[in-house]
Image (cartoon, rainbow, N blue to C red; front, top):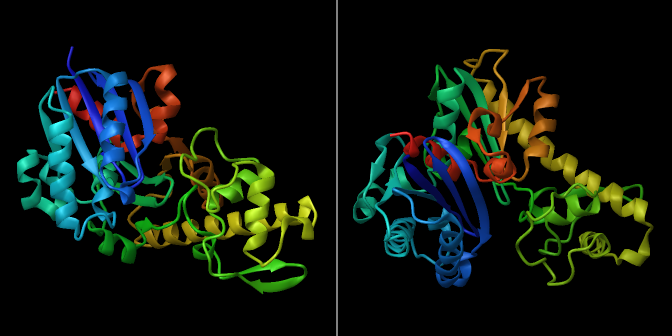
Length: 342
């Protein structure tokens, strides 16, 4: 039996998935905000390893090189690759470089373009093994990826973050961490079109918590004001966005405000998906394959675009106990599946 652990080092979370001969048996996401330095990541590696055990190999992808802890993306790639090699030293460690496959950690700095923020490519490559044509979509805490798969291969028009932003294949909006001033400029409130206060008073986690739809356990970051993660506290943060206190209106008013923000976010993702689909290379019957903690939002995007929806977890072999976590850690799961088969 061959065992691989896939790792996805993000700017605020570490994700890991373990697979045996192509079947995911466990997956986990651990908070490790790199803006505070790499110590949190070191601790997250130790915590995940204690759970995952020692495999035949480790395969690592990353987006954390963008953290402002590093003075450049190149420095971030080099640092994170070296740290992974050190912390995972119990088994061979390789770094995922997209179309260049794998490179050793000491060579990651020579392949910055291919290594940096390549996690989406790993997930889409696995989708291509299971589906001839699909729009792969992953919504995490911070971003949403939209990647066309045509003829069983990744058909993205862009590769780097800058290129993908311009192509609509990377949307900087997520289920938990996105400041609401980045979701909308104005809102409907009190029968008027109201400008927002441009302060980080609330995030998208508050929107979905106020609506009662935030999945359990996905909000691992501190709130914008450091206060509680309750519906009431989220409504108070939403109220701040329009210069109010929660007591200034009833619960229905704050629910309606949350609905406005949710609608604006879904609309932005739909717009980007339509931009990607406007290439007219995607068959009409091709589904949207969704993953990430924002999978519920992607289901609604698929409905609005009249596309069949397929969960990423249904395309892989996975233990029932690990299914939900594997869906939320798609890139790590994809690497574990692909490289535990060889």
